[in-house]
View 1 (cartoon, rainbow, N blue to C red):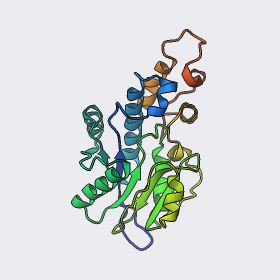
View 2 (cartoon, one colour):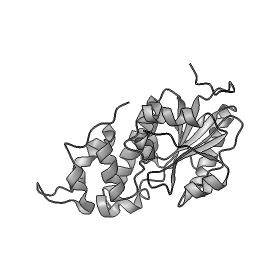
View 3 (tube, rainbow, N blue to C red):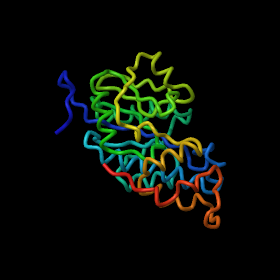
View 4 (cartoon, rainbow, N blue to C red):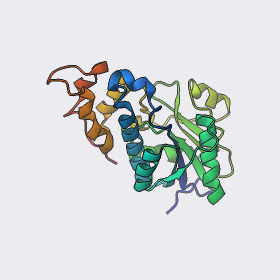
Length: 244
């Protein structure tokens, strides 16, 4: 059964997930993961994010806006719809384009922009956030630093108006979007841009694709050696596949 807002509107969510070409994605992780390994990690993050999103019962579908052929093929195999980034004008233009593509097929869709770098994402926590968001025309969830944004939503008939990048929490607040304060949803707020972010995600417990990549973060170092950025200290057994 589709989730209904208090006013009776259908809010079976369509999620829009933006993903840069992997050669350019997650550049700030180069120091922690190594330049050669970074694209593999970025893809693992996206695969775990989309897997968890599709497992959320309030999500109807997921559209990934990307021009990366390898990522598009892998994400399509999970069940995502791939939307080429035809505007090619950056993150917010890609998100607006993705939302437009969703509503071209389903004009009444409730849409949500979701970061592609949430490797610890739990479907049940995403469900809690989307339920809260369904009560407002536009809403957003701040990231773990309270500086950026990991999720922005717009219910049926409302434009998404994305303002991601940098201090996006302040920009989304200024735009009139309602800030969500849902408790108990750390996995939805835990995006990964730096080595310290990655440590925090690993501590929460990442999804299976990132967990498979995690042992490589030690860079083949001898047992007990420290990986770049200190990542090795949270490698198995702490890494675990995320659950619902």
